[in-house]
Length: 252
Image 1 (cartoon, rainbow, N blue to C red):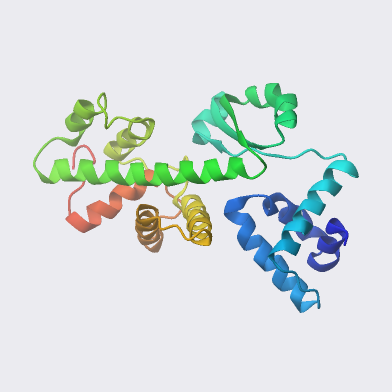
Image 2: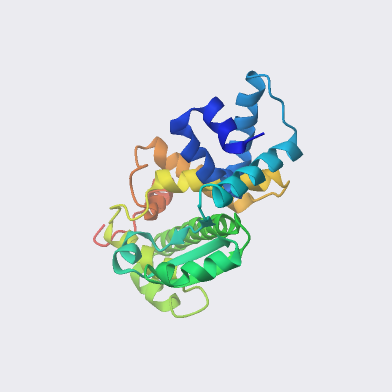
């Protein structure tokens, strides 16, 4: 079976590139492989899990040996500001020799370029990143709303705790935006929902419960339901505002 020919024949040319791009990513790859297997079943081709894995390996080999394509999966973190100034954190999966070969190219775009492991490992790191970011923003929003409802100034509380163990890059990036009522998107709620959905699918595929990630997904779904899907993910604070009737925006 020729892997690329199979994709082209049954998915159509336009879909091949997208399928190849995510077949190797654990967070989306599992779902994508199921969809491809279902399409093939409808065409009379049945593949078990091992055969699907072999198909993926075959595609990777064809890309490298026949098409001259070398693959790395390199998700990034840092949002629009760090993309603009070239200080992204880049997490890479793939063949170590290929990573070494293109390290300088990646370093031109990021302040941190870390090799994580085999192909797909970069996407695992990205999912872990998105889980931590969502949970961290949620904790910041909850804590600042708690401070305000207790009668304290959330901005002063933020200044008091940011230098201690509670402090984080997320806190310093998002709490000032919350206090200013600034929900202009650096990273939209809709995109974070997409990432958390992938994280939930991947974790469930390995029978791992991720309760905090699941809770943040429900929070973001509430925001989307209020028409705030295009807002920055610091908009999570408005979930707490609606629950408590308290706003932490300065002057309110």
